[in-house]
Length: 109
Image 1 (cartoon, rainbow, N blue to C red):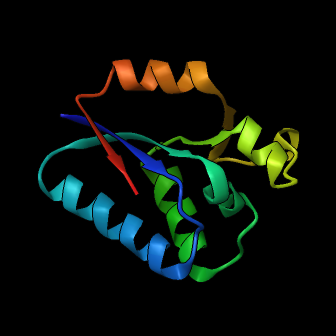
Image 2: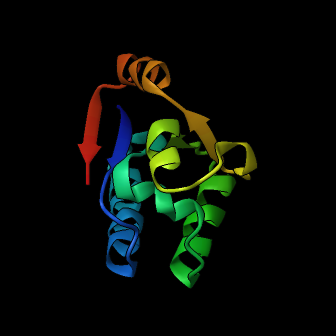
């Protein structure tokens, strides 16, 4: 089963730890995460510099897991989507719809 993670909460260490636990649990169940979509305050993850953020980025890169960053939310938080680095990908509503169509399950945090 393919799963898309939607993250709206600010990327505190507790939230990043929850994401890591969620990815491990889904993997243990044999479910495939197709990506993480950042909305609202969660887009600040692209600027967060912490050990957990580095681990999440490393995990996303190792699993070829895209981390989509909502362009509108990024603009509202002063983030230039043209400066995003791998694994962060600027995206919008149409990308979200595309990902939702190919997933059987959506988990929102």
